[in-house]
Image (cartoon, rainbow over all chains, first blue to last red; front, side, top):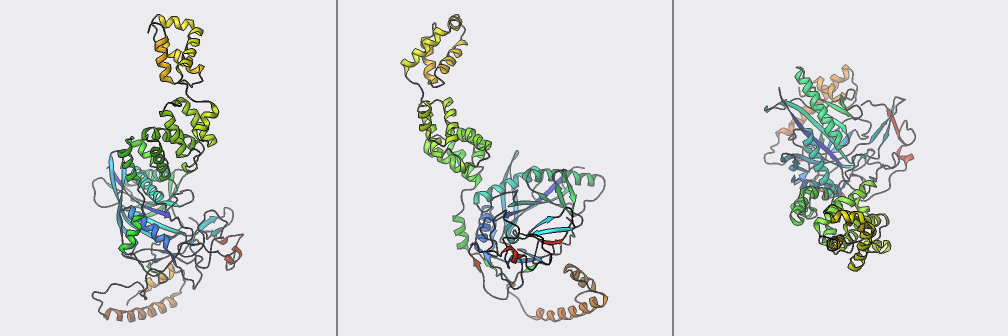
Length: 477
Length: 95
């Protein structure tokens, strides 16, 4: 029988605030254990959590960017369970009345676009971190993460393959980072994903029994874990067995998922409205105010780049991968007036330099002004494209503007006809054999002469002019 | 009966409480009385009323996104029965 996977994803994204969601403790990553806690996030009796307004605004931005409907009123609820990383015995989350619902994003696949529904987006607090002792029956608790603001983005079970899941995640990640509401750092846990997977006979309506996958901390691992889990379930079903509804952990090193035995899975959280936190009312005016702050989103930007700059879709995709890169490219276009040349330089040399040094575009030593100036210098014939490669390398190394580099290195293109004619004469005199070959009709030797002239001028001769002069000066042409 | 012994045992387990047979019976009976009394609320006519989640009418209590000093680590750990270094130490939880 042929099976069809049905996948739904839950993304947890850390909101990029300075302070925690319900108290003033810092959210800075990587500080000493338990150095960022207070009575509120430690869950001491008698404390009162107060909601960080920025968290609501950031969550609203993401909701609007994914076409969700923001509920006029939403409420925090207590999700009750015991685990040592949760000092209060409950997590403050949202349940019956979440911030936003009924959204979607469009993903690009090889066979065209597909719309993936978003069930809901809600706000919640993160739990602490556990470090397990390898030699003793102890675990160590760090509560710095406790109370760090998260939003949970729950997709509809619209995803049908591991590739679609990866494309969906990339889209969600890209939007969050564009909005500057999440830093998107997967290694530090600012962007995490759980997946619900089940199989059903192709064409069937009803869903099969699902497993929940956790512990996948990269796009690649999400895809690998899903591929593995789909195969595993298929194997179970084909063998006449039944998939067990359970949580499974992805093991990156072994490339398999393991059942999460041991942790009790009583999904009986006894949610109820948190009496400490009053309801949040979101007016239309507030929604409009947030909507006005939304930047151009990646898909819109991509389409505009295609339209305005006439660059290939692939280029537009690369150049809009981050907002900073897109801004850089647009600044270069604006200053140089050459969208295609700008795209070639940014996608080629600039990104290569940056990738080699694992540097962000925001730290690029070549400013948009400098790159634009260099493009203009190529266009007006001051330097050749070949020399420009050398210039750009020096610009990247020293951070100097192109004119300074060209002057310092004496790289200005030779466009003086008299000087070039002299060089050509010298080259012809030095290569009598090739001259003879040319005379006897071997056109291929023409290229040899071009090369020799360029070599003699250290690549500074204007290539077009060299061509023209050679045609004129070489015998028999 | 509004609540069974099994339900009481289940909720007790979720709350990590341990009751013997006598206690379970006693609490079942007490909870039953309480829930029967709560039934009185069902006599009120709530047609057209929005469900309330909170007892007060206030909405939108916010704070600005400003960092305040956290507790010094020594104080943060001062209630921990068995701290280790800068950590709280707990019995190992197996994943």
